[in-house]
Length: 268
Image (cartoon, rainbow, N blue to C red):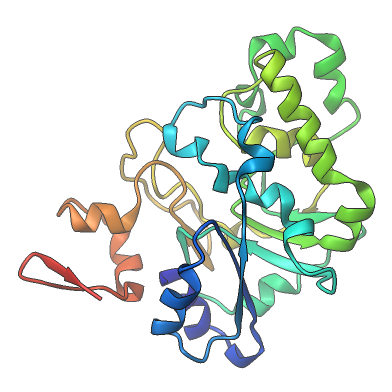
């Protein structure tokens, strides 16, 4: 709800935005319309069956939810009339016009996202992966960098033609036979796309505000301008606020919270 409200409030033309929600809960559509009765939106139900047998246990239980893997199947979940989309996780808020992000040129690439080439790319894969030449050569000739999959501009046509869902699934199938990564749904995306995407300015994904995947400790903003704040990681602002132990940056999320808290309780 905070992601929707912040997107609308900072858009110069909110009437031009159409939301497509991916969920396993049919009731979500009614819940959203209670708060945003005039929202142009559509709900697409993700059945977990295609991915359930492919999920490997990761470092944090929440990362094992089938819904985390729904982004793998966007070209089949969404109507074929859609050719380009902006994918956003739900644990974020925008503080700039989303149209500027959506207008990112893809330059013939299947997707665009902020890249972080200073991050240690090797940690996303196991020693088993790096010690196997046939696997580690996957990145040969590619200027592969880490990117966060919570904010992506996607060319659905190019994705469908390139069979990228199949490529992601093949890596997940290999992971079931030999453990080549630890971190949920991210590594298969890196294996398929890292070094092959268009770049987006870092201001469009100030990620990691939820801390790491173990303790979810408070974090500061990365240096530079901010257009989108993303609470990726274990700590979520709504949970920390409800527990009475918010981080300083959670105060930036709070104005978009559609729940009214009175006398320690929560009301919609």
